[in-house]
Image 1 (cartoon, rainbow, N blue to C red):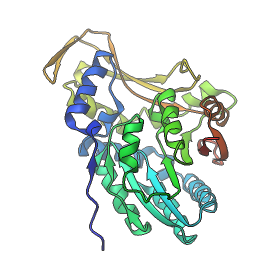
Image 2 (image 1 turned 60 degrees about the vertical axis):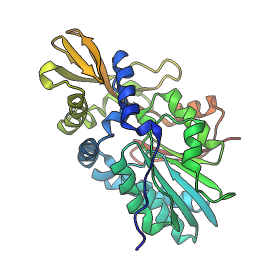
Image 3 (image 1 turned 135 degrees about the vertical axis):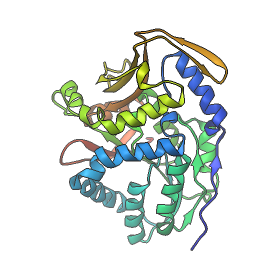
Image 4 (image 1 turned 90 degrees about the vertical axis):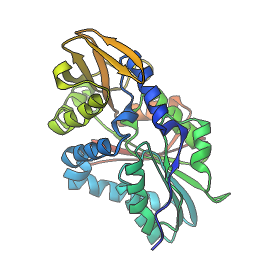
Length: 325
């Protein structure tokens, strides 16, 4: 058996960088997403949320949808392939695609990326038996830029066609940042991305209908874990879940979570004093929901071509294969 690969730790994931980002975000009354996954404990709390509420885990129809769609993706690919998985999570969907590609005789060089070292290693270990070559996983914070892209691509065989996977990222980044990242990766090859979808007829009501997937004990424990790490506690306020207003640039809505302080607090983060008044709110988390039509419009506005889409029978999940024209 091959030894597990080492980890490439990008400067964006160094503790000092993450905490500096947290300081800047707190001044804006926001918590950066990276802190929700950064420690092994937070990764474990996220996995508890995933197991309890993800349709991927709880609904066989969702898993069958992904299996069918990824089989269709694999049928388009032969020969050799470089596969980069951004925000890989546990790597279960990556493994499904690798299994399908192996049946086609495709030789894959695979790399996992995540802001969580624990999740990047788990994905690499899961996919190791299914790929011809495994590159060291990269631990880095997003959003993506050309400098980070260079680190992510280092080690892939020159001239090998590339496919970038962006599963589960579209909910957790501001739409403009997410699509800028898609454009960045589409410059070197096709991108296969996923999106959580809402009801296409009554979009706001469709977003509201998924609130129970977020407002639950597991998610509250996960998000409070992050806040506890910054010095806050449940005695300082409450988490409030609601449907967001449309994103100003692209009109995308989602679930927005705020921590509303019930009392004034003074925090010290990396030596910086932050004064928070009673009644103020910290934006702790958000998760954007698209429709197929909104996704198509966003891709078009960013100069991307939608080659093919796959929508689940429940119309709550979508896969989109995109490229630069």
